[in-house]
Length: 622
Image 1 (cartoon, rainbow, N blue to C red):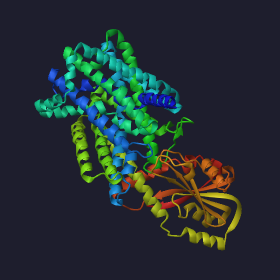
Image 2 (tube, rainbow, N blue to C red; image 1 turned 180 degrees about the vertical axis):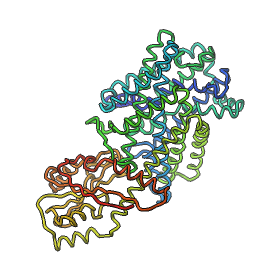
Image 3 (tube, helix red, strand yellow; image 1 turned 90 degrees about the vertical axis):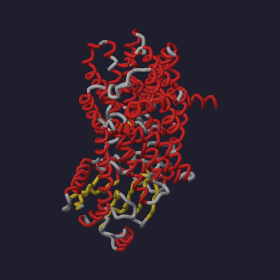
Image 4 (cartoon, helix red, strand yellow; image 1 turned 135 degrees about the vertical axis):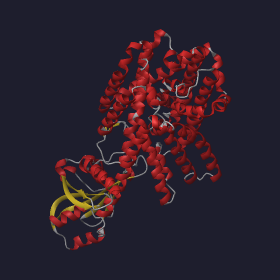
């Protein structure tokens, strides 16, 4: 049994290496090169090299190993992680006013993720293909078209799912990290004095000697940890233990060896600063390394794209984004999904970024500001969780928060200085996503309030209908309702215009809970309101996709037999009209109407056969 568990843990850890560490694992392609960017006017001298290496090493230790893997990963929601999960956890056991503020902070963090994810694929793939410059400078003109071609292929195969491609991820990334370690170790052996940079005094000395310039340089050092959020976001897929094992056993040592190997190369040959990663390799290994680096960056991009799909699904189910088509690409893995509109919008944005910035060094100026902003938000939300939910002592929480922010805020401030040189891009994209999410959520709340302001009681109406029923027709009718114990608008509309009722009425409410999954025992609850009316509440987690067929199957187990093919589904479609209002409120209202018109209809969302749906239009003024 122990042998089987060890083999299972090993298999999961290998899968983790193949998917979770793609972004942070390819940062060695460009981080040290950008540290010596001409923006900082720092020469390649031993004290500068030692200073950068010490900063990178201790940032990996403090931010990744200590903050995320030791502390933040303890905050999980039934094993799930990520910024929206942390937002939900922090909102428990708090007042309504504080919860609203925490939700706003969490949505800002999620918006930052959307903003940064546009840059990640472009930055990673371009950094790998720029190795062509080292192999043959005459091939420089092919970098942009090759980068776009690789990313076009990557986005085109998303609809096929990652199940088959995913089988290649683990061995490719395993070879990648072993290659990083071997190349770095080879260079360190030739110049072992570089290991002196492990001492934190070099980081401190670097700040003392270079003052303001060293602060600006933090904007490049942070590139070493830009993939750290993925470790927490993907926790639900692989578990804490496998992520920690993969990091400490392979990924962390390989990255450290490679960074220090690049440093040793720079001490020996300062001219190698133009691309220290590729120049680590012997001449015969250049082309194989270029191919391997391209594969690794494609995998890193795939991990980010999958993360966007996962975050979008959570936001849709929690009511922060309008319903959209979500396709499950695997019958086994619930996490393997494809969202067409997000996929192609992201692709278009990435291509524009590549064409607009032209080189990975230019992209580095825009990279990091949103990630470090998310890191600050993670620290705040995490400390809220340990104080409100875990009941840690206030003083301990304050000290921990100050320690975490003492790392995160300087990184964010240093990256904020990139605003005018490209940092505006992820912030602008994040602002757009934040506006969309808050507009949709607030608009839905306002719409529900207007639709149900008639104040009629569901129980009173049912009692009245049972005493003096209208004309009855055979069969079962399902009325979808956004809230339990509220009269569905479609039911009122049907009674008003058709003046008939089916012999059996099911009032169906779908409720998304703030947990990732709901046990099947709690999936469906049925309440008999009268001989004719039944109230059904179906509960789903924010990582699950509701399905009417499954709901009816669960109803059958509760002695309420239902067949989709024999049921009529009555749904309301709200035609929204604006009342007169100030221009600044009119914009968000028009945005909500636009989102509403393009949202996926409930019949498509829950896979209801079109010939069983009756849609009633209702005019609502907001």
